Length: 54
Image (tube, rainbow, N blue to C red; front, side):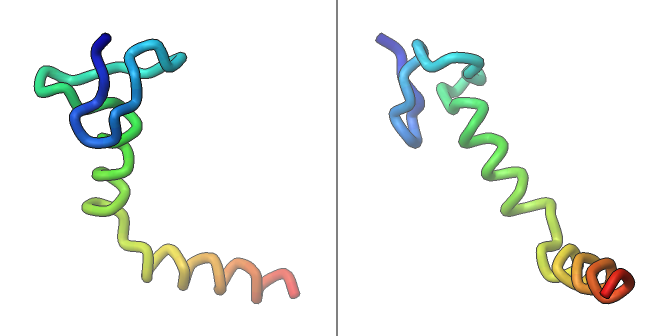
């Protein structure tokens, strides 16, 4: 049985795909969020939005 080379999620997990090096779509999404999303900026945007409706 095939499984993710990072988290060991099995290929039988529903709605999961694997890339050509054996990394699952869940791990790829986590990598994207860690590398591409500016969480500090997102936090500031959320604070501004909440303050707007207080």
